[in-house]
Length: 254
Image (cartoon, rainbow, N blue to C red):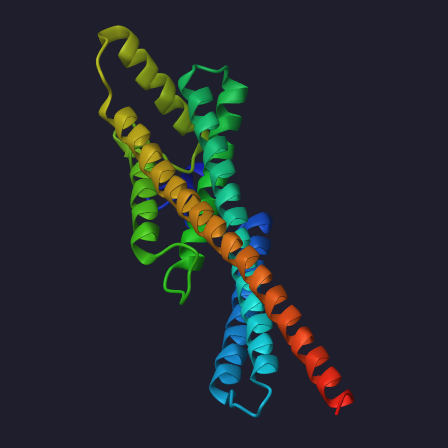
């Protein structure tokens, strides 16, 4: 089947495949989420089972220690999200670079190569959206995923040439860009398709930037909590050791 036969408003007949980098990062996120869930459950059971057996300080220290494990787990999860976000931003940056090359009137070879790479990057981003949609505890919430997909669908649907959608056909995609450039040069007018594609890029960038901002804020908060908890745990352990020493001295002097 030719590239032209594959290209349509839906991005071709092939199901988008999650790239190896995103696939690895998503898998690591899910593993760390499972581990965090297990630690939280242990903490819940330990807290519920606490009783004053005359050595409550020891039980408190156990809770402190497990709580620190929860905080460390949250840091790992947020770091995983940050890695995914970084990869998405990298793919978006590459996609926009491809778009700029095509709209910069690059010669035939580089222009078509840019179109081919743009298709590849968009497919991988769409694969991520499809993989995350409907998941419990997805990296992006449902509304953000829908906004991302809507923006990408707008980019794809506006690649029209000679009255038909040419998304997925690198040659005709580049021809569409050259045609838009010619129209702008001849008439000095704005091209609706070009504006819609640029608006789509802006929406995608905003969604990913919001994820980055939220993740960094949460990561900073949890890291501060973790450091504070470490200090409190150390203080509790020192108090426990001092109590033990005093108790031993007390009985030794009897």
